[in-house]
Length: 249
Ligand SMILES: *Cc1c(COP(=O)(O)O)cnc(C)c1O
Image (cartoon, rainbow, N blue to C red; front, side, top):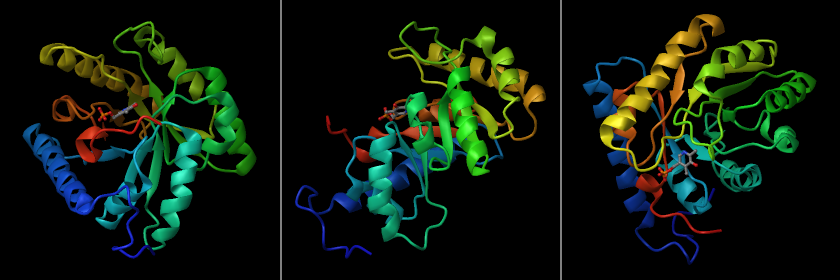
């Protein structure tokens, strides 16, 4: 395990104190929002660590945090191979994939990510299922919904969602846990709430089709995660509010 004083030069002293303070702050805000909204089920704070130094991930794992979100498969593998061996006593450490996935990365993604948030096309689902079948495992996934109908954004349209989910049932190697959305940038609070409420409505509408495991809603980021929880998020994806600004590369 890494000796605490052995920090690389790019990481300034006190970094990990600051990080841990932000983690505690974010956890408290998640918990307050959950209680405020009168919900009894737990809410997962996913620390989105894309483009963040592995030392910061390790600092959060040391502090007891276990769930991290990454957007790029190779970057995630590299970080996992650096961080995970430092924490042999944290078998519950998990990485989620929050970014888009290419079919040709299916082999690297299946069985590595605890949850893939970005399934949005049948070809991708089929590629993931094929790899999972070959390995005899079940991969947990979310269906990404383009709730804001932006042409540049990935995700299944709301109208297509029931049919899409039904088709996923043909892949027993995929366990569909729920839905994910990326909020539109620059919306007013009430518009954001409306989008999140619409997501919750979709989850409720499709749930009877999908079975008891279908109960997760991944929505809300640094700027609006409390609001998302109030509207039904069960996983919030928080990057900069925890880690600070991302590096460019
Ligand atoms: C980067 C990213 C986040 C985190 O965004 P912040 O605003 O830094 O909290 C969440 N979800 C997805 C899909 C992302 O790409």
